[in-house]
Length: 406
Image 1 (cartoon, rainbow, N blue to C red):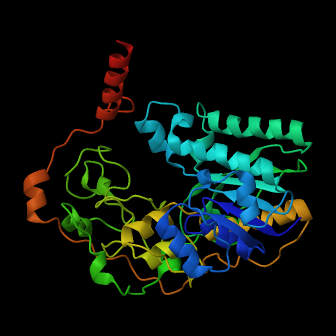
Image 2: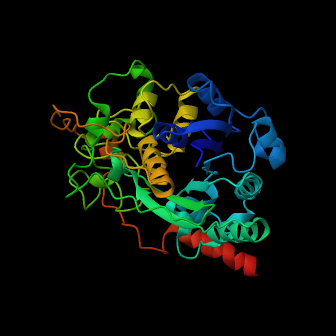
Image 3: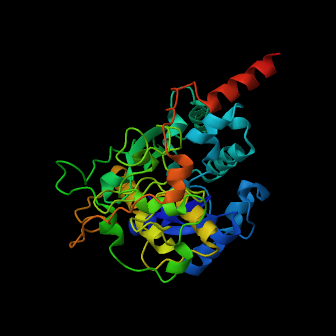
């Protein structure tokens, strides 16, 4: 199998850095976002970047011609199409079918390129909710396209999935991702056994392992802003706003489960990070244990990008690029898995991008008292969330449905 990769919807390159570390050469990238393109050019100028930003502007044959690729010349066609239509939030807030979302058209474009290229391995990365019960239309669409290709081209693609958590492979972040895979010869990728965790020989890596005590150069720019900034120091490491509810250990300032999980969420030195979001609000964590925003370098370390990578664009743009990315160490494991399953290669050395253990972890940061203004404005008692399907969001959806039926 050629050790080459055509990357669609490349983003900041998290998937590609991992495949590169596994021994693959990136022979083409397609990316629409202007800042992500600058990131690619700054860090990997040797990766051929498609001249036109949007894959929709190409016929598949034109894209392959520009990148000097042909049928069967690529080992992996790798893609991380935009996940917003398929995320939990997408199902929670939208009533229409996911394939009707314009962003889901990327799947059609992806499969058109796959049909033209006939890669040895098709690898599609996305959020795990892509395959949840009642949401299978995306997987069914890809499977039907592959079956049609097999009938027309004589290939043997059979779609299967791998659901992996990055924390089980040396990433200091709990981040579940789904990999949809199909090989041209009909081979299945073997299951990837976790290397980190209880009874795995190595413990899960924690935020201290990834970040340590380095002081960011842009520390002044990382101060939390907004209404809740002064409340964050009163929340212990590893806790969120629930600390200040009737079931927590702090002041009763909120009702239990009346806010989103990442509201005022703070990293703990002795725990892995929670999933990094792509579009954080002013009070959306995880925040650093010293009650500030994470620097772009720290976000990069939690995503196990190579240390010499620089993310271009504003802070919000960098956060979006990194929040949308695949942890590179997880992608390295997937790349090795392809080589193990297709070429029979054996790897004995640890993943090169995995986080190493760091000694000297300090005690948790001291917890500050709640300031007087929050006690005056928010001190309880507060009603808890009424339960699943009974909150204001569910009631609003029910009203919309009734209006549509009427």
